[in-house]
Image 1: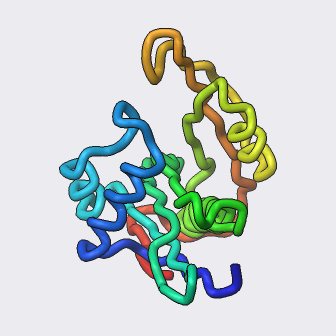
Image 2 (image 1 turned 45 degrees about the vertical axis):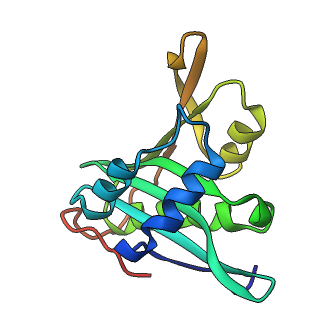
Length: 167
């Protein structure tokens, strides 16, 4: 998708972000409106949106919520509208998380995924993520998750005290 733009979410994006959460996640897995508002204003989280075009109309195609820890960035949530799946939106969002992690001196990117969703875990493995822990009953009794991690090579990077919300 050549016209895709990844940018930091703005408060005005909240209705679209909430709509994507509602469309892409079951009720037990989606973030509440209150949690989404908090994420937009948190000093340790960032919300990124992928803006694309469908039928000539510009719209938010995907959303990613990141938690910025001292040594790592955690992909807390990544959702892409069905109309945009397979067009590279998710890939570009993950690439943004990795680039931001490197730029701010983090040593890894982590995430949790449903252990039963082999397609999703294989997709993350394409980026170099590896499963390093099973989280029993993470989603509900009997619904386990895997914690996955991408170790970033050491190299020159900036300090990690500031979040970069620019494109």
